[in-house]
Length: 344
Image 1 (cartoon, rainbow, N blue to C red):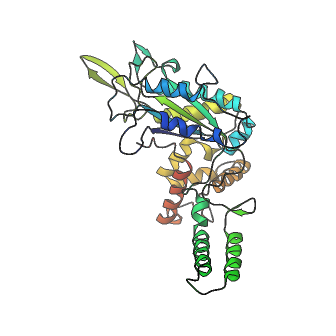
Image 2 (image 1 turned 120 degrees about the vertical axis):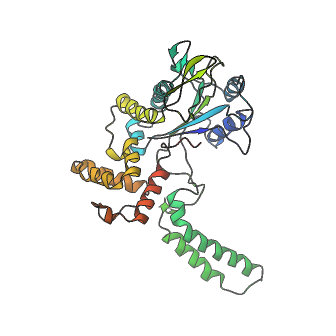
Image 3 (image 1 turned 60 degrees about the vertical axis):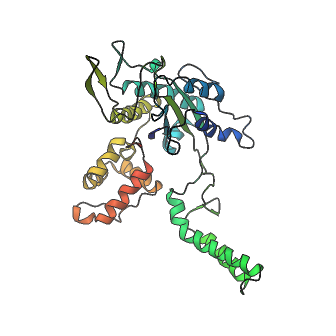
């Protein structure tokens, strides 16, 4: 489960409307043949919410916010293939999980409204399920295919120059080279070289959530980007609680999923394990080695599927973990899991 929380940020200034982001979330509904599978927005109590309603509700819930402050936050929930398999590609199950997840989100605030803790009814949000993803330039498949892509582009440019009479050469020979490079690219999907923009095969369902910066009453500012986990500060002569505990939220989100769907989470799937690796790769790999055989095999399979570079043998000492290898694996884990950061 990879969860990211990012602030509303478009360019150098904050947009005064959520329209651009909502339009972006409607992109999948515009694909050919999606008429029957149209996904509407939903919130804690309602389904079938139109994008126009979402824009209006978010845009009018910004009392006393400055132009330089975000008006909303985006939460992206990315279940793994293993988690999605457990759900059997069920949109209703994803909705159910989203509504439970937002209870966890609310409880992660160290805030009070009228003397009581924040609850999910105080959160103004709208969520949407998407079922497709495309390969991006940051995906390891694209990066590792890039040398082949570069050579192919050079050959294609040469063919165009030959056709225009700008250079001499054999077009057929270059076409054969291109065909060979296409086949030799390390990452293929359905017999084709994986390129940026190509739809990813398999179940790619994920959830986008747009959350208003202000609470449902439009009177209290609730920022998950707070640098404080839990503290109190004096305001207008009163002690006021503040803060958002991101670690609590991410860990609770996993536990909620596991409990709701009776999911048996592997060690490497946990948010805590990914954090532990950043702190101590040696202890991380030692923990993997200590797993029962079947769980260890699944752990290694999961790591390999993320594109994280693995050592030929599990390191058991710091000497075996070179600086280059540590950075390589750390970058892989950070790329695969952005849940350790809010992006602020």
